[in-house]
Amino acid sequence: MNCAPPLAPSSSASTVPTPTWKPRARRQRNANALQKAKRQVEEKQKELKAINIALADTPENIIRKLKNIKKQKLDEATARKHAEDANRKLKKENKEQKGELESLAELKAQAASLLASYRELREWADGVADKLDDSEAAPVADAKLLSSIETLTEGADARQEERVAATA
Image (cartoon, rainbow, N blue to C red; front, side, top):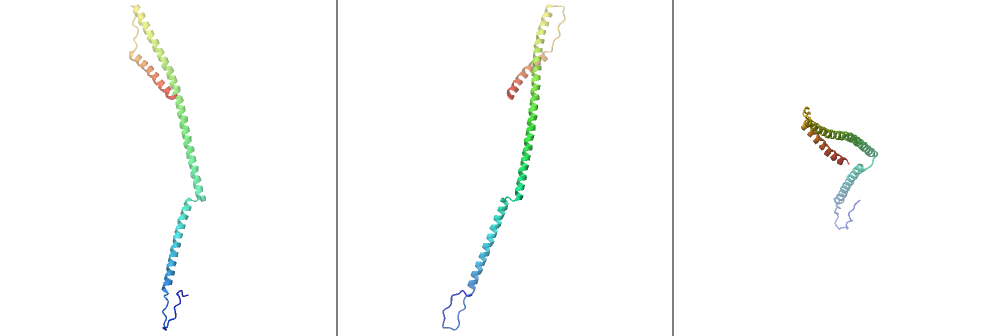
């Protein structure tokens, strides 16, 4: 089919042929543009499909997500169990240390009373020795040992007060 407008009859015997290359070129350009547009649409559809696949909740993705959640729960439960075990262990050690501290406090009190009794006995023995001239001198205790016992009992009092304040 010829798309060119009909030519007016001319007086000359030869007619000028209609230009056929222009409609073909136009059709070729339209076909190329259509193919280019189709390719662009296909590329966009591929991009959208890739995005949908990445975001889609396919059965495989759901199973993978459930496995990850289950693993996280197991890890959290294991960590919680370890923390509770460590907490129990620390409480037990704390209880044992408090028991030892109480027994040491009793020993300290006994040592302090024994030291006071010893000093009184020493004073009495020195007084009796002064009154009796013929008696032998009473044995002398190590002054350094006595002073170290005194400092230990005084220092233990201060440490015990600090510990009691810290645990309260």
